[in-house]
Amino acid sequence: MSAQHPNVPLDEDTIDDLLYSARTGDKDALEADLTSLASKNNTTLSHLLSKAIDETTGNSVLHYACANGHQG
Image (cartoon, rainbow, N blue to C red):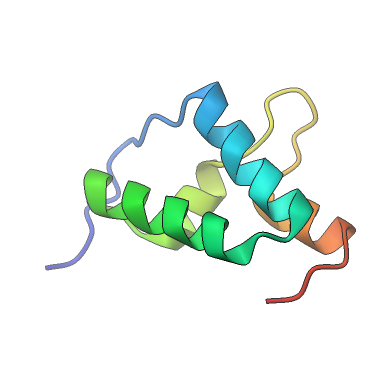
C-alpha cells in the first residue's frame, strides 16, 4: 500500500526533536523518529522531511545536517 501523504501535523516539539537529531548527527534517533511518524501517519520519510522546518529560521532537517558536516 502506498502512502497517502496526509496533512501530517508536526508540532513544534516534534520538529525540534528532528532538528536536534540532525544538528547533532544522531542518525539513528532521526531515522527512528521519522520511521515511527511515517508509519503512524501513513506517509513517507521524504514527506515528513519536507514538513520538518523551523518556523523561526526556515531551516530544515537537511539544512542542519549539512551545515554541521554530517554525512549519511
